[in-house]
Image (tube, rainbow, N blue to C red; front, side, top):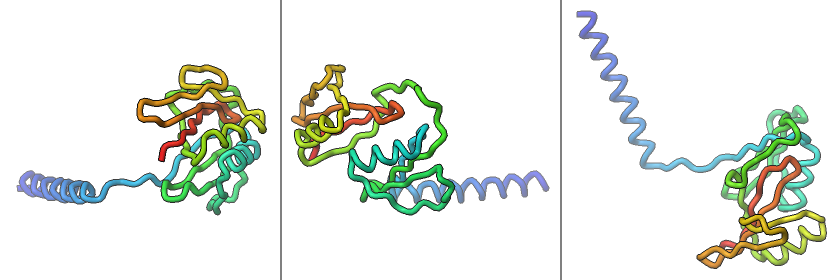
Length: 152
């Protein structure tokens, strides 16, 4: 009798979990934030704030190891201090930002002496995608890859 009762309870729990999971499919998940681990919070905060004109928003920790930026409707970017310096990152793992005018953005990078390249690694190069979007790649102070494009 205990076995039947236990079996029924387990079935009821599975049915509840499955029902809840199916209900979530009717409302897709949305991006909340992207976290990037950095070696110098001060340097990375200044970089993301100045290069992308991101606005700092309040963060709950207040421990000097976090900076949070608003990404508008896309969510937030969280910088977290603690990464070892001089790590190597693959270009396939990158954050991408879109700008209204990539040529103006490139001028700003050049005036800040930030080197960029095409997807193929051509220094100062611009990749022209098949859909007409122009894109460039460069690294943040810790070597994380960033893409900037003019996708609308």
